[in-house]
Length: 391
Image (cartoon, rainbow, N blue to C red; front, top):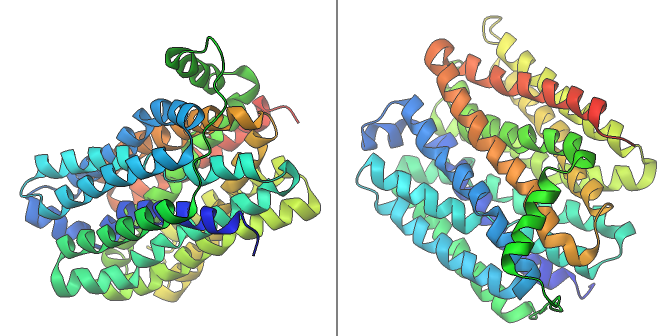
């Protein structure tokens, strides 16, 4: 096996945990809202604190990766994530759950950046898209846990048990990172301060040559988190009258698509090129499938059709991995942490904004209106990318 594989797999366990814990509300939102004495719209706002804290932590995490290396940053984030998971599992009120979501967001903020940064430094650029796709695929498998397995656990033992189960992934991840990842201490840059590094992150984030890419990043992960992580379960339970476990089973389709999709996208772009067109095409197709899902409500599509639509959405949106490939081609390996941090500010900052907007939309038009929020955002961002991003 490639010597890079084991450290990357160990680091990706944190990304797996992040995907599991942030999509848990998709199969537990009703009982969480009941036990915390809040409405579904308020719960959307509370869970929206996760991506908001995630985005806020991007700059210090990116600077830390470039100054101190992947291993110490990864272990520190896993420790923070463990605290947040315990807080969520024991939360007696909405305010405590809000704090837990903030701590979890901070802890998970570098879970994808750590393996991506390691890959950016350890593999050739021409192979990066393949490795990035594998990192995303393995990480997205965490959403499999928040489909049927955690749905069953929530049904049998309650949503708090779901958070405690996620804690086990953190423990395994910390052990694996400790044993397999070497300390890649970066070469210090003379005269460079942490504040200078932080300003570099912001400079990349607002760079005119990257603004089209950042527009797509702003809505791309928000759509995944909104459809799969928050509103997909309520849609199946409310519009289709499905039980929790049955909805979790159906969500496995989109979850598997999100697992295999990034690796497939990396392989496709390596073979056929046309990165920009594949990136935009995937996001426009994802928007169209969300609209088809909503249209199927009044038309009484059978549940299996919804499952196919959601699976297609997962395959289409998985081409978001090409955002990392495009960004990697524009920066030097020693800048990888800061550049990924800049892009992730838009990934998760946008997710926080869109999740809040979807909650407001749900207050007026229900789950269908919340889903259509993400479809509209995907179309607008794709058009901005075509206008702003030069080949």
